[in-house]
Image (cartoon, rainbow, N blue to C red; front, side):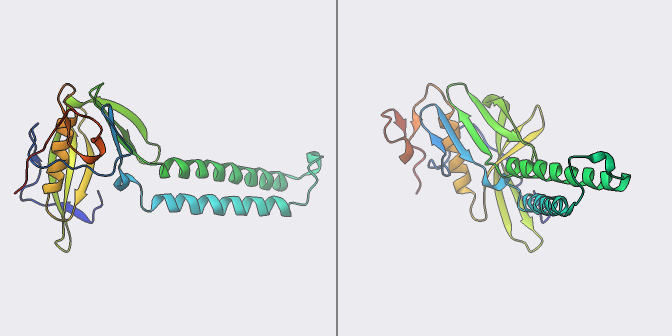
Length: 220
């Protein structure tokens, strides 16, 4: 969470019960059937650091390649090189190697972070870390839902639906809105019903082909 946003002292950290409270809703799904629901956490993608890494990678590669092209000493007999020439050649190769590592890091940073709810295994898979994220699985029962409210220095409000892991003190931010948090509670209602393995599936368009479904809370 950027320092641009700070917690709003009123109605923050509202814990959500394991029950349906609003009409079902979910964000765009990467996969959604009677076994797995997965979605991309686009807000978890770094906004600036990836471009810094890419710029450094291109700069080092350009500098090292041009340096090697301008290096006039024959590679067939390095015994005639003096110390400064050997150091320069080694430095250029090191820069090139670092540039390749930075390109690899850029690839890792820009990969989509996918959050998956596995209904059959009753667990949640998510990525931890920013630069080199690794995926971990947590039992769904170890997580609790909450609504958190923030506002920026200009008073604009942002509301998050989060999953809290009380054991590891880890937080998964699922989705946010700048308007009413009602759609977030609809998303939570969808998750609650979906993760009941032996219960009917939530009645949403993406699950139309399954006969055993249940309606959410009817609005109005």
